[in-house]
Image 1 (cartoon, rainbow, N blue to C red):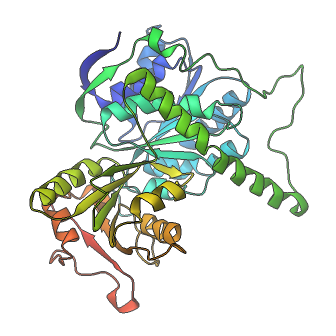
Image 2: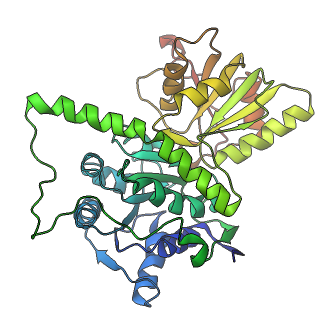
Length: 395
């Protein structure tokens, strides 16, 4: 039977990795993801988890170990943040191109510089096009649930891709929340023992990561892109099966009061909960405002997003990363692409919020929806025609 417990979200994440019966863990400590892998090292040392915990000297080596272990047929896990991901990023697209179904918990943190240990989404946006399945979660229960969901999706024989779960650093990783833990018996059918399709073995020679000439490289990249897009039904199946098992249901795009909304906030990650409170407040005041929470980042859910947003006059897109020199944030740019070509598309307003852990309040969301300017930071790049503003309270 499932049990409910209050715990630090990082510990809940580690508990889920243990219950998923991983075979190999390779990670390097970096704030704010360290508590996850510290707890996993304790599980291994205490005999609670029968796995190899590989101590490495850098995140680059951690991903190298993960590639080797997954290629040899071991269920593999890693975790990192920020500059750790930047050091690892040389190898992330290799893991996806080799079709290695590992799982990474990316505990989102600002990329330097200036140096910041706090939370935003600049790290994940740096690997947007790495070919991995990428999801966002907003609370501790979703973190715990999505470890199992990620392994179920990644290991499907028609998918075989890494899955990256994005959880906000400190806002989630160091927060204590109530989490409903599943029993091992409940999980057996959902995450069965890993049966790899292809493995490296000296008795059965196999080539992985071969050199591609210009005559083959384009075809290989096209095939990879098609596999990522084709993973969408398997992602839906993973969420549907989890809902049947646990009673907790997830979708690529979560909607709140969108059916009749004139203005819709688009948000990702933990600040979606703050946005939801702002929407509820404005609804009580008679304003037709809704919230679209974008859970699936790659493959982008174009059809479902377009359907959910189609009735609105205006989308207020919240980005937690800057696309330097571009027209607003990376999510806003993606959404403009998603809506291109549809009849009477909504206006897309881009706001950059919560950079480097800056606090964003309910009132900030109200101001953004009402189109107010903030006197904290003036409108950015107005002279160049970029349509975004930066919001959030200083200090």
